[in-house]
Image (tube, rainbow, N blue to C red; front, side, top):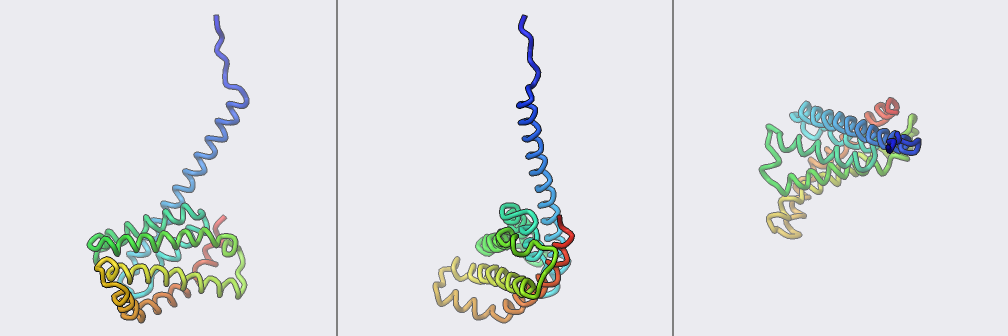
Length: 196
């Protein structure tokens, strides 16, 4: 008669390690879903106010808190939902713009993860606040350039069409970038100090 052995200590340790790793990924998934829902909700709540939005800063903070991969996923998913289901005009109506929106916002989350060592701090000096303003300004500039060039590139308008789109959109984009820079200065330090 062969006796069946129970799990060894090594099997138990491996099993517990695997369980804790899966549990940590589940916790990050839930946190990412919360950030995504918050970004979409804030997007819809401010959609009638031109050039003021909180989606970018929320996605950036998700990258700071959860890392590059999760921040990228939050950014892409949040803008996919917000733009795709927007009652003011769905991004699905113009796929090249929709793709550029997703890429731009996914980059905002990835950049948040990349700069985590610099900005995931409990206290912010003047130089860090200036850096936050530049982060908000730069990330928004990247997003705006992506979305502005989507039409001329997809329509085959060439270099002249791209330049015309950038010049025509300059007034709105500069206002958008400055407002996001200020939003980053106000929001990021206040939120980060409560994240563990």
